[in-house]
Structures are given as C-alpha cells and as structure tokens.
Amino acid sequence: MPMFYFGDPTFIILIPALLFAFYAQFKVQSAFQKYSQMQSQKGYTGAQVARDILDRVGLTDVPVEITRGRLTDHYDPKNRVMRLSPEVYNGNSIAALGVAAHETGHAIQHMEGYSFLNLRNAIYPVAAFGSQAAFPIFFIGLLFGSGVGYTLMTLGIYMFLAALVFQVITLPVEFNASSKALMLLNNGNYLTVDETNKAKKVLTAAALTYVAAVAMAAAQILRLLILRGSRRD
Image (cartoon, rainbow, N blue to C red; front, side, top):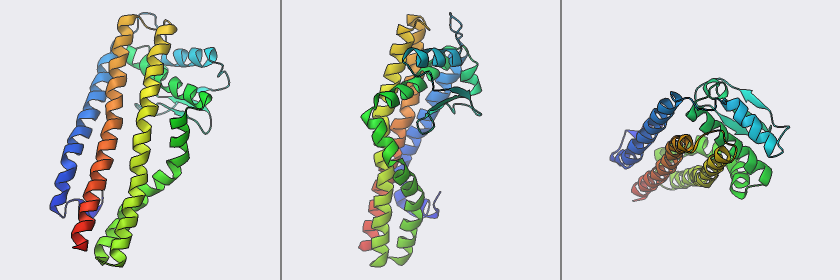
C-alpha cells in the first residue's frame, strides 16, 4: 500500500469503498461457508458437473484440473484449462456446484467469443501494468510538485484508469457467467429448483466483490485527482 495513503485527509474518500469491500468479502465467505455445508441431493461433485457441461457444449478438449487454495477456481482462456479448488473439485455441496458451473460459464463465453470477455482479455496486460506502476509514478510526481511532477501525476492517473476500465468490463463478464451457470444447473438437472436458488445466493454474493472492486478503483481515481489538484494549486 503506497505511503501517501495515510499522510493526508483525502484518505477518507476511500473509507466507504473499503467498508463495502469488507462487506462484500464477508458476504461471499459466509455464503460459500453456509452452502458448502449443504450437500446436493443428486450427489454430483463440482468436477463431474464441470466435465459434463463442457462435454455437452462440445468443449471436450478443455481439461478440468484441481488447483491449490480456497476459492481459487478459474477458467484459464490462454491455456483453455478449467482449474477448481479442492473444495469445489471434490465437493458435492450446493456452493461447489454453483462455483463449478460459473467457471464453465466462462469457458462457454470463450467458445462463443463473448465480446466483453475478449475485450477484458485484450486489455488485461495494460491494466495489470497500470495498476502496478500507477502509484509509484504518481508518488514520484507528488515529490516533484508542479511542472514535471504534475505530468507524472497525470500519467499515474491515466495508468490507473486502465485498471478501473478493466474492473468495469469485468462486471458483465461475471454477471453473464453466473446467469449461464444457473441456466446450466437447471437444464442439466444437477440441482433441484430450491438448490439452484441457493446456488444463486452464492453467485450473487460473489458478484458483490466485483462491484466492490469497481467502487474501490473509482474512489482511488477520485482521490488521485484531488491530490493532483491540490498540488497544482
């Protein structure tokens, strides 16, 4: 975390977004924990559901692998691999099946050429670099003050703006994947209607974390703009 976070009163701008981020993280953790304790009636594991859905849509060449960690589940579009955490891969809970179906939703998006997914993948390198380099460049600009410093602060803001754009584009990608997941769970009869509604609560809670990321990035941009404006004055 950059040093200048706590050195001026503009830090207060971040507090609402931080509180929202903590709330979103609490919601997803508690929802996953709650519905991880509820075993699905039909007994499918996350790996079985993912494999069956992928085969049904013609993605027989996309492997389903187990990966380390908790809630580390993801679809890797570069290598065309689905990776599920042990709790999801081996689990037959409502939460596990919801997460597995969500990740297959991303694989289907990739297959279909979903525009927002393609755009997100295209700007990821720029966004990743921008999010890492923006604060050091901005901080150097703060040290210089006006002139060159102002230019560096502006550059830092533009670089972090790429990260905000990435987070905004992520929203429709994740919402669409969750929508696909619920449809797939229903159509494949992997869960009952009541269980699918519970899986929806897990995915809705997870979606909050992406909204929180947008709010946090937007608050950061606002704070940087204020800091730059104060130095220019």
